[in-house]
Figure (cartoon, rainbow, N blue to C red):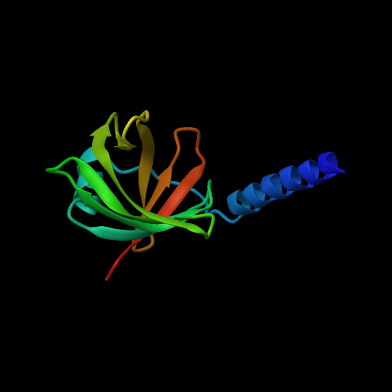
Length: 132
């Protein structure tokens, strides 16, 4: 019986991920922003984000001079917390690095009133909108 529960749990997790990715907006059909454009769009500003490749929402505040991004998050609609990570731009990508982790770098596209982050493999990671 426990094997059946494990299979159901695994199917539910995979289905949730598929639904999350299926609801992601399409990547814009234009070139991503340059490092300079990304810095101008993000630096000194606060955004709310919705991730599409994982169950995550939150806020980000970007500070280029300090090389950091910080904010709050909600994971799986349950776990809440705050974070600070290293922020830098490299090879045309927007990169963040949590303590003791490898850097994660995304392409940035202007999207509606904010921006979209897309993985190097072309998957939409998140969409961020400015906090007014």
